[in-house]
Amino acid sequence: MIRSQCWLSWRTGSVLMLNSDGRLLRGRRVRKGRVASPTLLSDGLMLLDGFWIIFSALATKIVLSLYLARSAPLDTRHLAVALVMAFMTIIIFRARRLYELDEIMEPTGRIRQVLQGFITAVTLTLALGFLLKVSDNFSRIWFITWTASCGLGLLFLHSLAAGALNRIDSSGMLSRQIVIYGGGTRTGELLKRLSLAPSKYTVLGVFDDLPPEDIPCALAGGAEDLIDLCQSQPVDEIILSLSNVEEERVSGLLERFGALPVAVRFCPPFSYLAQHAKGFVKHQGITLIEVFDPPLRAWDLIIKRTEDVIVGSLALILFSVPMAIAAIAIKLDSKGPVFFRQERFGYNGQRIHIWKLRTMNVVETGESIVPARRRDPRVTRVGKFLRMTSLDEVPQLLNVLRGEMSLVGPRPHAIAHDEDYKTRLPAFVGRYKVKPGMTGWAQINGSRGEISSEQDLRMRLEYDLFYLEHWSIWFDVKILSLTPLYGLVGRNAY
Image (cartoon, rainbow, N blue to C red; front, side, top):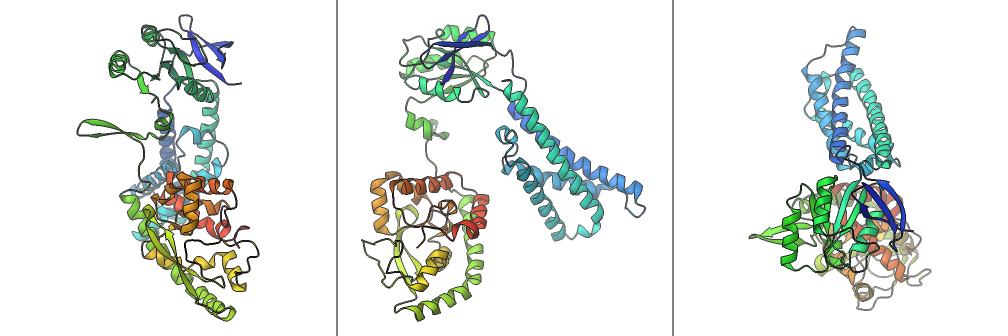
């Protein structure tokens, strides 16, 4: 049963719990104030990490100087190395989202994430010392002892923080106290969504001066009552959820609520807009809602292209001998060319020609192409092995170096298949926002080979769109590193 905290008897300081029918379930007291800001808590852990890294470096050096006669005394160089290590660690931890409260309180994989991040920081610090030719100036005993004790200390700090924050979170002390103004069409949905995370959000009441629409509770009052509540209880946020968005009414409400020391948010009346809104931009003083952005912009494009050129060149050199052996095997196994070109949709739906090693007795390049199936008689003996191991895709490294494809991205399909998929699932064209890739998040998760059902198509699209929405250079590195384990061989590749 979904519970919504949506009626506040605020004069007595109690929240009444109602179910979706508006029936009272139970009551509890409203907190009188927030214990600490989530931002301050996460930043506090970050500062503790930095302090511990520097303190452990200096303390280790002092102890070694006291007990080892040959150990050099502490000087500013040790402090400089500690500062570099602290900077590297904090940057990497932030990139891994280890300072976000949800991640801090998540026990699954926490130790592994902290260790991996710290080992990366140590490796980068060592590499920097080697490049600057200063690594010989420091004792190996000191560095090893320091990094070992520092790593253990970081694990202890993050474990302690996870336990403390989980206790605080379960008590509701970190919950954001919210009031909603407006009984619009999306208010019921808003209440249900917020009720799914009761430790994060406490809805103190729903207010409106007009008769509400379909909402699962009674109104707590009008705008004046809401203002009185904000002046008598700690309220963190006011959400406007209106169906009637006439400018005069909205501007009047914003003027009144804007005088309160409370964050004011606006819930768009259109669910599609609310789902995709990214933020706001201004053009010549006109405020616009950001709905969609290209997945890669500016430096993202430069970084990804650099990755493709460097790694693609190395991969082409590495696979040159296996590709030559495969070419000889293809020639000996069946008649026909070694390579063949096939048309595909590339970036922004533009048509490109990709290169592959021939794996069939026939070369299909027309508008109607029959996909390979299990025990397909068209597939040659050598072709079966090449398709199972994805070695037939190696020539596409040339497409990568030409800038037509990327190492990582949604896998391109034959033109005829894409046209069919776009008809069945219009959102499929969203894959064209980036260059097609030789490997992708869908392939790592086992979604490769024949698409035999609507579920297969939807699953592959979900994986590809997830990649677009969460792209980073580290995500690409993860996919490339996992490809030899999960992305090359699959049960649907034949």
